[in-house]
Amino acid sequence: VALLAGGVYYLATQPSARDRALLEERPLPARSLGAVDPVDFEMTMSGARRQAGQRQWDNAMNVWQSMQAARTQAEARTRTREVPVLIIDANIMPNIARNIQAAIEDEKMPHILNRNMDPAWITANRILACGRFQGTGSCDEYPFASSMQGGLGSRVAGVPRLENNIQGGVIGAFYAKHRLKHGEPYLVQVINLPPDWRTRPPTNQ
Image (cartoon, rainbow, N blue to C red):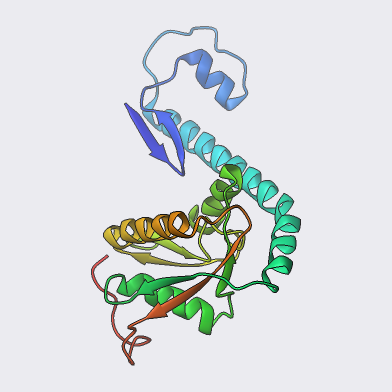
């Protein structure tokens, strides 16, 4: 049985004595047969999961940092052209709309983004934005992982998974409609937010 932990799949079986020794970096015992101590097994696997999660985070950071020059170049080209507008409707995605608006208004994050079509970069953005999210609901990040501005420093919030699925379809259809290529800009606009959106309780996660 495969279990997902921290974005990494692990096999939910007890390792052999040889595998345990490799994980713990210690010599094999004289006898390699017998039952596995469940406490020792759990401690070993917890350490392995932590190490794998940290490696994943470090790799994502390296990718993200290596792409910042490309982001800067794309943003410089953006200033000289008109851009299509991506509408985020609060009547359809109220929690996501509030997260995006708060990111733009309160945290001064950009409302003009550049499309990102690099799979490794997008994955790195998702890990750096949501990889350590511990809130309730599905992690929503702004700027989007599919933008060059996404990744480290993004604003995140827990939203209903249905809203995240709807947003994914809206963004994908928008990219296709406007035939946006890698690096091309677009503007994000939130509509239909109620006047009390800052204080209104979120909907069910």
